[in-house]
Image (tube, rainbow over all chains, first blue to last red; front, side, top):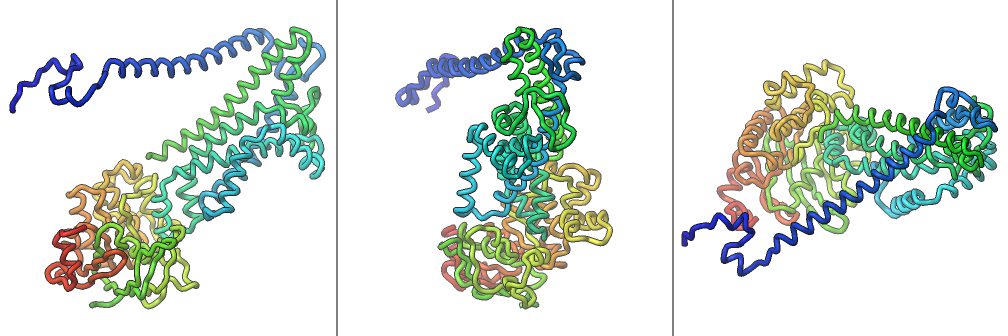
Length: 308
Length: 250
């Protein structure tokens, strides 16, 4: 019974007699397959990284020498050396503020209703399906919707308010879905604990559920706003201009945004315009990154308080 | 029996079409510990949850019959479930502190219910009541999840005690704890019955026999036997009770 255990069985991949009769482990080929897949996944990462580096390198090279303070503080011009991005930069900032002010409260409130109050019946299922579908509707369709509802019907004209509302509609489904996911990840035991302590549903949401789900909601907001800042298509029907010599001063002013300005410059025949388009891209990236950095900072600040 | 604080009359609870509790009638004595025992799925937790209207939160649950708390039906249309839960507290199976500091956990209930006194001393008193004060007094502002499982469960008890409830419902409060932490909670429960009424669900029969004054045995949604713990464990009237407590099933 007390057979001596052969110490070489582990490193040699050999089996003891009883197991040898039962299994064919083929450890070598299994480990090889493991290694192959690891490299495939690593390769996928390299592809993404390489594309990003090449793209950024190209843009930085093109814009070299064009991106300066004058470029940021000047209005567009027929002459590339005089052209600047001021109108589009301010337009984008205005548009993002309007979009965020409308889309975040409405989106989060919708998610709270669906997850915390609504009964999970057919009505809920219908709304849920529609929201998921809306997230996949091409952005130009939102532009046409914005043109009909905001520009014509609500008579907001080709204003930055109409643009912001259109953009808010576009990102609303993204914010709702992300906020719902985040609310769903809050354990029910916390809700029950709160309700068992004599809290109302609203108090439970306000003091337990929302604080704990805030990091997740903010992540969704980052993603949604990042999408909005790069969109051009929905703003074209709403009437974003390509050549504008003023900065918006109130909600009803005409506007343009960075991606539209950049697109406009890339379609000009002169080479210099391609360089300032690249400079515009850098500005757009800086705005995007600083916006995301703010949101990530906020998220980390709140995440510290929540320990799983 | 002593004074009756809760009186359950013909209570039937359904989840959808599944009947979880069939026509239960029983009375809960004030300042005593009542244990609800029985195998999994026998309805004991359902009964516990229907004593402070936590069943309202389960979609598809429907309740018929009455639960009289000091003579008043907690299911009457005019009764606000929030008011019921304020007076009849609950501690859950798994420790579920909020992701907040120890202090904030205990202060939560009093705060949202408009406590007028000194919050600091109420928190201290509640933590003392749950036998946790000495262990946490120097780190009240640490996150509650830094505590061990047993400490977290006592924190949950402290949190419930802070509202000065009349009745405390405990849903298998020790099932996620090790034996030493379990012992501490059991001792705590014994002390607490001076101040309030305790109803505890447990599937640990030794636990029931150690701490409870009265024991109710449930099987498939029915109340099989209910009486003084000693009688239920030493001289059960029903054969099924005997089979269960001698370990023949369940």
